Image (tube, rainbow, N blue to C red; front, side, top):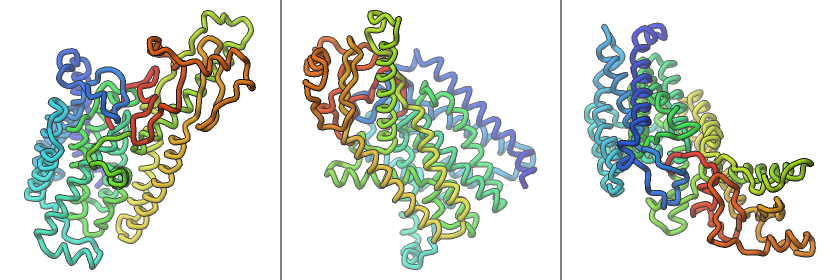
Length: 466
């Protein structure tokens, strides 16, 4: 089976990767002509943490790569690996991608219209790919699925939910692409173990197209997947999970919980968090887990940069006039993603190992939710107890590295340092680009539900949307 997949399916994988890579490269080098329409210029939103103008139509590269891989699979000699169900899934995802692409370009598509477009695409996929979820192996819930209309409605709800979940996690460089690759790998491994070469090939084609896009989005973002790309990947993952269950009765219908653990958990937690704050569930904020992880790493890099600067200026023979300002430091917009990749990979690996056990899937997802909440509470506590960092550009003095609220006593410091700490920084002299800020005042720092003061820190990489 594996040898047949290599001989018949290698060309589609290669075509998907090369087309996605080529289209992504063309979009980057031609950005000067289309950037005025495709730029992510909504920098006023709290989840926007990147600097500069970056095109957000990278999803087109992924879609064209998948279509090229699908065409190569269909046109292959005696190729049995790409059937009508796969074509039905691609037909259903097209309106979803187009409505996401319209949001990327015009940025005026209402959330209700996007949800309607996703539901319409899900109905098309259900009709032509026959991916209705008819049972869950839980007797109480299966009583509802006995009614075909209820089964269709809940299937549409699941597809739309996973589609939006993948869009929510698209908040750091490479985070969406990495999570998608890990999820597709888990699906492909289970399909390979069951001998389902069609699902395995489809997962491989989508993964190859995503891999071709990833070099332009991580570690440095020169291209964003956009809503269109995130919707496309989320919809295809949801469709593959349903197709895997429909074609293989041994797979638990709850396998999708662990295969998409991080996106689903992030979505459910975001809904709960916003309802607790009594704001709309579609209201953007700065309280996602990936944003808190980035903020924690940003603080650590900032402290290291300031301390290294103080040590460098204290060395003999260093010209203090030449080092009057601290060097810049790179924002962890890309380096924070691997930590979340690892967290998601744990759930996917364990879920794939127990793909046939419904109880194990539920327990694994419950454990992941608990771990997610504990990590989130730890990072949230750190964000609320923000460290007070007083820094004097002229003397290189850094002090007050304690939890806020903290007011250092002037008598405990040198008079020059005390004067620098209490003096207000003039608004007419903002820190230069690429330099460390002159003063980081925790009193102006918002809560995790608001944009961070360092979210566009000096020397920041460009990152994806939140």
